[in-house]
Image 1 (cartoon, one colour):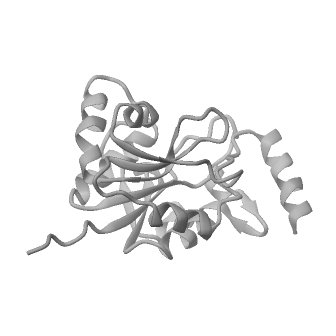
Image 2 (spheres, helix red, strand yellow; image 1 turned 60 degrees about the horizontal axis):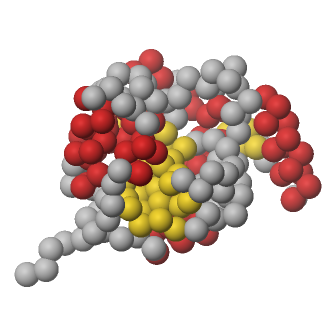
Image 3 (cartoon, rainbow, N blue to C red; image 1 turned 135 degrees about the horizontal axis):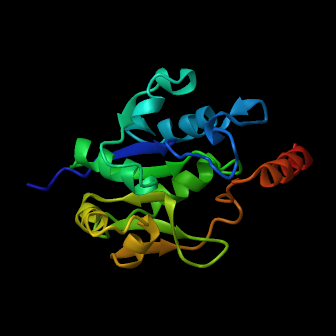
Length: 199
């Protein structure tokens, strides 16, 4: 009997402290909609189940409270805490992990990632447009990626990108500027102008 394919769940990372932006990036609106809700719609449309990754203090936040949540069960160590918490909750699922601060991301980019998915790899990832390294926050993490990510966490190394570099990954070409993110008020202003010029 052939084994059932590993289900693909979605994880929208929204637990960051947004220190450089000086306000919660998830609530920032582009084209009239908070980033979190726009990213949620994209993710929910292409996965079997989707969840928002939150810190315990964010559970009752009005923007997040109405969405299915996975609360970090690891210390606040950045994106790795969200990924590890999701893997612990549903260990038999693969996770399409997505940052919530990608205003240019579109459904076509997510479908391209899913169509190229290699379940035999630890992860299927895009190449970063900026440094040529694997992009961990728009990537499919297979169940086999958990052991290395957990080992690195236990060793005090919290960078998911470095975990990918040490793993068996399927690396896809960068999808243009779809994964450009926004971390500072200045970058946000530039992105707003860019989106207005595209409208």
